[in-house]
Image 1: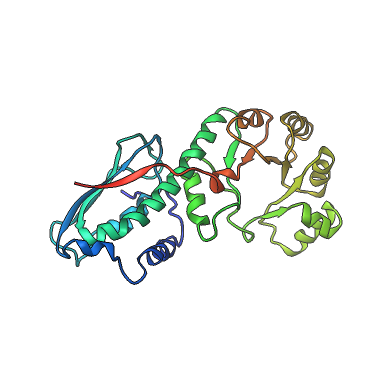
Image 2: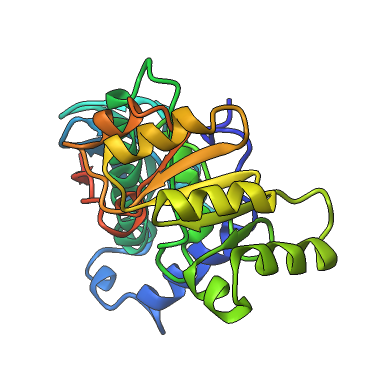
Amino acid sequence: MSTWLEPEPYNWAPIVEAALVEDLGTGDLSAGCVPVDSLANWRIETQADGIICGLGIAEYLLSPTEFDPEGSHLMVHAKDGDRVSPGTTVASGRLQTQRALSSERVTLNFLMHLSGIASLTNRFAQLVEGTGARVIDTRKTLPGMRVLQKYAVRCGGGSNHRMGLYDGVMVKDNHIVACGSIQAAVDAIRRTTSHMYKIEVEATTAELAEQAIQAGAEVVLLDNMTSAEMREIVVAHKGKCLFEASGGINLDTVREVAESGVDFISVGALTHSAPSLSIHMEFE
């Protein structure tokens, strides 16, 4: 059984390898305190309630190879997206002690960070249940970590916005200023972009939202509006496009925003401000 929540994020291994090289450098000086032929029984245990994410990375870093001693093994006891609580063992095994020590911090860094994102996303997702709105992420991600951070959002029950500038169109305020109007910006994109791409336009007022709809936007982002303002726009233009709410939305306000009738709620904090989930590795 795969520990990943399908589809597995693409090209993740180089990110993990880079982190391992960053930590190991020319070699682990501390691990030299144990004999090279010693084996350690280890387990990875969660220390808080949340959603686990990153077990495929743990499996990648801690799996025995053909060169490891006989008796080496790995067991993964959960899969990404599973709910965990304090004391949950998510993985365990037996591995060359030096290798386990050298892989410990990188493994935990990924697990704690990605599980933190998944756990925060899940809190948001639970709060909007029954409204029809979906919690989505943004491009406010750590450089080089986007594919894994957005994967963690999925594991927490959220959905992904565009991955980057290449797979979705969003006309924001600076685009509109540069082009002169919403209509001019949308028309220019229609001329140069495949018909397969939807166009989303950011609007800060009801007037701009109406201009975006008239310009042919399939999605309108309602930026930093009150729930009452968003509800009025959604009711007035129901069925003409999809609506996304954005701007300063938190756990205290997300339910009210969802009840305004918007289709999506984007939350930058999912990836830029999620606290890590406490997880540790113990030798036995």
